[in-house]
Image (cartoon, rainbow, N blue to C red; front, side, top):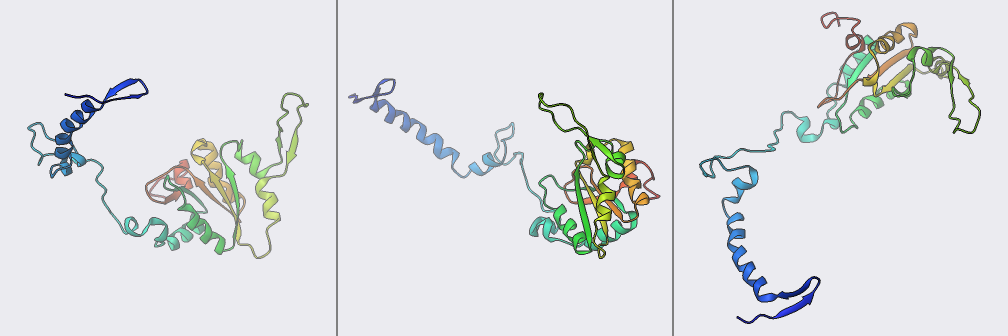
Length: 227
């Protein structure tokens, strides 16, 4: 058998051996891409080797209208959302992990005349002091500047005084509220009682679809039956 060589990276290569190897691998490729490849691609063969018995992996099932047209386009619960905001005044929401759904409900509150205060629970400190009292803030000194202390007005009271006359109220939207303690959630649930024009929306976790519950129920102030 004649062998034609080619010099490349790593030394000489015999081209005839390469073609001979490809001919041996050709039946394996044809058997994989044949009629039985559907069963192999979807799962594993059974112990008996029968291709009819295999386990399906990653089967997607549509369970509702939102799976066909998108959950962000289905607004069948907007009226219930607005009524629950007015009734409970403090809600714990659970948006999907991919995000974006909560913007539909936020924009509807804006149309009702509410103004928003967006805060992150990480670094919020004591919610009672930050939202309703004059609180100190330590700016970063970068290791070379003297340690200073600045005082800020109450976040909620300051914005309530700055609301226009036609505003319906102020919505305090707390991001990542799942890191707050139970006592801090209880204060947020009682904040609309202390400030009647304030509504509280706290993102307490994630779920497969956008859902909400009264914040008093999540904080343990009321039972499920009372809520």
